[in-house]
Amino acid sequence: MEDPSISNQRNQSAPSTPRLNLPSRMSDSSLHIENLPSRTMHINRLINSGYNRSPSRTIYSDRFIPSRSGSNFALFDISNSPTSAEGKEDGAGTYNSLLRAALFGPDTPGKKDSSGLPVSRNIFRYKTETKRPLHSLSPFGLDESVPGISHSPVKAPRKVPRSPYKVLDAPALQDDFYLNLVDWSPNNVLAVGLGNCVYLWNACSSKVTKLCDLGIDDSVCSVGWAQRGTHLAVGTSNGKVQIWDASRCRRVRTMEGHRLRVGALAWSSSLLSSGSRDKSILQRDIRAEDDFVSKLSGHKSEVCGLKWSYDNRELASGGNDNKLFVWNQHSTQPILKYCEHTAAVKAIAWSPHLHGLLASGGGTADRCIRFWNTTTNTHLSCMDTGSQVCNLVWSKNVNELVSTHGYSQNQIIVWRYPTMSKLATLTGHTYRVLYLAISPDGQTIVTGAGDETLRFWNVFPSPKSQNTDSEIGASSFGRTTIR
Image 1 (tube, rainbow, N blue to C red):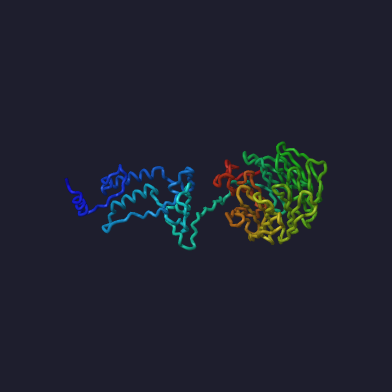
Image 2 (image 1 turned 135 degrees about the vertical axis):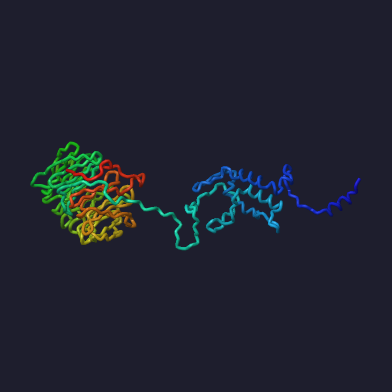
């Protein structure tokens, strides 16, 4: 029997080899260098299976089990695998590396996040933040340290077709700045005053109907569709207002009260406002027997612009006296007066997006579009367009508006509000663009000019998709006549 002391001496004289504190079912031989690649691949497969992270989702784990990828295991302070002088990993370092990957996942979080700020001191977390900046998904790297470079994604500007998709000949369309001879109904029917007649053009079928003929001694000065139904108001040069049922081509009634031509009309439910060259505005309730229920006085010259707000609480009026007035439902004197324009104010538009936001445009000597907040009675901004502002209309689908112009460029401009950057400038009319209306779907506008043409433009996106074209009149391209 061997002496235990001799055995201890032999063990001390033999060169010692490092031994790992391994589980009982794991032997030293399983960690030989030649076995590492296959086992590492196997572990990586186990780790990475189902580990595809969404770039924009927050992943929640069980409330009692922390999330591996969200927890800050770096606080364990397990160092990277040490290497020997020959550049080879020793056994302890190999085991440490495998243990680190198995516990923490393939990517161990550092002690600072991508912004350089210290991370939370909590080791365990129960949700995983997977949001990343959009440019991190780009195949091209971006150096965030470069000053003056914005890494936010740039939205491509929307393309507006530069040519009208349809042109209608409109013989005898008057070249008169103070008239309003074109309007588009909620039922998709366009009304146009040509000389002493009113014509209807159905945008779905392209069918043209002659609604009325006022006779040789009278002419059409304005047209306006009711907000609902098929009633059309027609203002005449004799100072009368006629109400027509367009579905039956029958005149319902004729209302008097003005001494001179009626160049502006605006509906508010069953209330019809009419503006005249006699400087007055008459409020008419078509349900009442009287021709008008109240008279609004304030303008010192012809009233050429009228628009009710979308909530039907405020009426804006513009006149040849360069004034813009705002009235409420019950006032006979203006509640707000704006005198900044230096030319006639015909172009008026209420914003459908912001309560109390009003836009107005001035004539040849003014050339400006001005914005007002009627709730706070403040002048917000002014944009010099360089030419006479004839009409304004706001898109109900996006926060944009269209202006049409006269002297000297006869252009149509699509603006983005509130920056008032130009999205498109449309040309084609050879006379000043005096008339403007928008389709009921809010995508198409029609413009009219003294060149006796009506031009249809797709300028606004649909409410759901900014790439969907309007179907109004899409089946009939080219040039036709409205009568």
